[in-house]
Picture 1: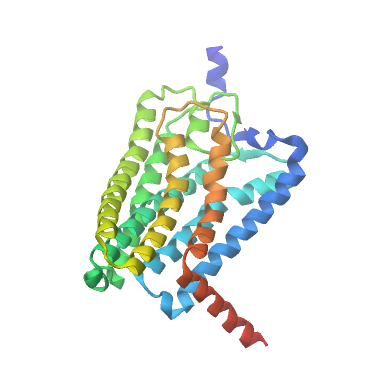
Picture 2 (picture 1 turned 180 degrees about the vertical axis):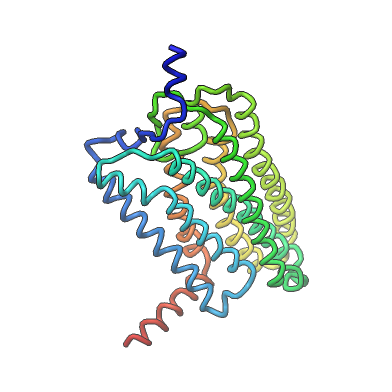
Length: 313
């Protein structure tokens, strides 16, 4: 048995079993996934373009919202197009190099979103708790610096994940019980001793999650305290509406990510559905949540679309 394992080292191709979960519904799932992906592209692009062209949205809050939409768009594009092609061609294989590449970008954009949501919480903290100093604190250079930190930290996080993954040796079977390549589905296929690697995997993800959670917690404690002590009913209502939208988005993203990544490499039946939720449904829901609960964004989108339609006519 060990001789077989030795000869099967360094597999070059994997089969993704997640696409075979519902074989009779493949056409329905393809159509549904295609429509969802189109909505993700349209919804997030609309926010990006509106924030760029509408002067009323040229503030730090909406600057970060447009970056969140950009990350959501990229995040969904890491997995969904491959899944659509596999559904269409009934081909569910992926090469080792493509798998590692997908893994890198999956964690790169997920890490960026995690840190960006934390930065957005800090932005709301400054806006609500220090409104008179908001424009001087959250100036353009600060926004660019915070954005650069998001991309840089997530890049190093992803690089560490890839370096660790490349240390694994795969002996077979070459079947990944998932819709796409990720840390845990790959780890359970490894014939290496993954105890130390697994600890570093969890520590790497856990460190970012813990730091983000601490900043989120401190920010919202300050925000809630300020809202409770506020004497302005209108200001309280506006602050609560903005923060409620952000908290919903944070919960939708952090909840599934904590379930998937902050535990040992054990496969559960729910993993595939949870992964679909945070890689597909969250990028779809984020623009909806922010536009439906934000009058300023809705007004800006109507204004932007109105101007484009007038120019065409």
